[in-house]
Image 1 (cartoon, helix red, strand yellow):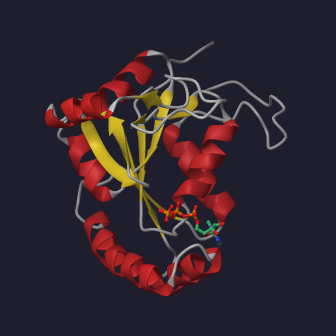
Image 2 (spheres, protein in one colour):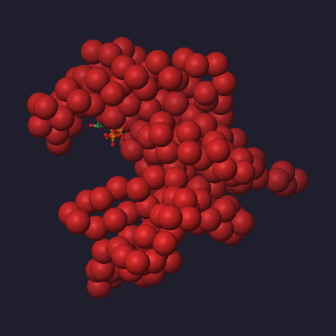
Length: 204
Ligand SMILES: Nc1ncnc2c1ncn2[C@@H]1O[C@H](COP(=O)(O)OP(=O)(O)OP(=O)(O)O)[C@@H](O)[C@H]1O
């Protein structure tokens, strides 16, 4: 017997360093149905990158046009190039039988809520503020000033997570495996490949 799979995108929010990326990576490697959203970018493709698979490679003027049409949930500028998560891309990927997993900040989530995209919103909480600080410092990828800025932002994000109805599910990422199990249960699609990539079961 097969049950219809809920293809609504999964939005994963939470303060920097809480483990969103770690959980998203685990989710995506547990079942090929989970896909990251394919961003638009103005940067040139690298030799191994395929347009429409790794990114939607776009000219600066096309990017500006999309921006003026309010086509993006969020945009970033990195190394002088623009990157954006397009709402239409999320709709297209969902129509193509993928569950899009979005690791976006709260502002991006608020933007998404204003659209007609029916997503499922998950907030990842640290077991404590001290644990968050420890993880951020432990990762060692940010300068002290940046760590402080991220922690200040975390206070605001954690407050927003407590607003009734802001998220469909709040998961405390204390033990990673426990948090991952909670995430999988919420999403309702069980793993088809184990950590070695060996098939283990079908979707629920
Ligand atoms: N449950 C956990 N217990 C201990 N450490 C963890 C746990 N989950 C993740 N980590 C570690 O915490 C650090 C931050 O995790 P990660 O980079 O996934 O966070 P993030 O929320 O994606 O951050 P950012 O938003 O800045 O990208 C990493 O070093 C990761 O290995």
